[in-house]
Image (cartoon, rainbow, N blue to C red; front, top):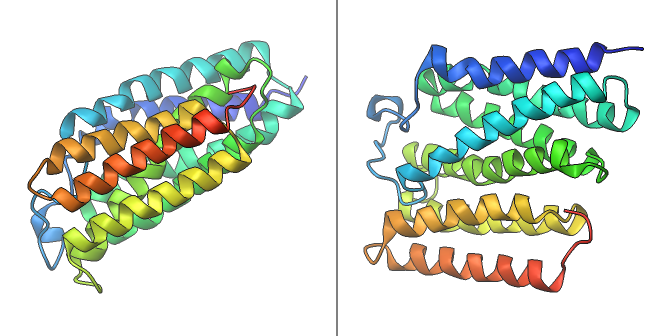
Length: 235
C-alpha cells in the first residue's frame, strides 16, 4: 500500500490551514504596496464574505484525513491529489507574499486557482462529499479571489483602467471562468462559492457604484439560470 500522495496531501493541507496562524489575517493590499493606492476597491467583496475560509479549511482538512485513512492508495483520488497539492502548496506562503508584493501575490493565486480547477476536474463523483465537494468550494472562492487580486493589482499600477473599470472586467472574467468550469465539471457548490462572492460585491458597492452592483446581480441571475438549466446528476 503506497500512502505517499495521501500523506503529502494531509501534510500540505494541514500546513495550508495553519498558515493564517503564523502570517495573520489579510485585509487587502496596503496602500504603500501599490503606486496608485486602492481604498475600498469596488472589486473587493465585503469583509464578512471572507468567513468562507473557515468552512474551506475545515472541509479540506476533513477530506485529507478521510483520504489518508480510507483512500490512501485510490488512483482516482491520487489524480486529484497532485494538482490539489500544487494549489495548496502555493497557498501556504500566500498570506506572507501578499503582505510583501501585490504582483507576486496575484501570480501565486493564479497558480492556486489553476491547481484547484484541475483537481476539481479530476475529483471522482463517488463519495463526492469527501473530496469533490470541498475542492469545489475552495476552487469557487479562488475563482472570485483571483479576479479580485488581479483587479486591485492592475488598478493599483494604473494599467489601462481604474479600480471601477477593473471591477467590471473582474466580475465578467470571474463569470466567464465559472461558466466554462461548470460546463466541463458541473458542481453547484463551486458556483455557489462564486455567488457568495458576488453577493458580497453587491454589499460593498450598494447604490454608490450602481453599474458594478447591477453587473454582479446580473451575474448571480445568470449563474442560477445556468445551474437550473444544466443541473448535474453528480455535484
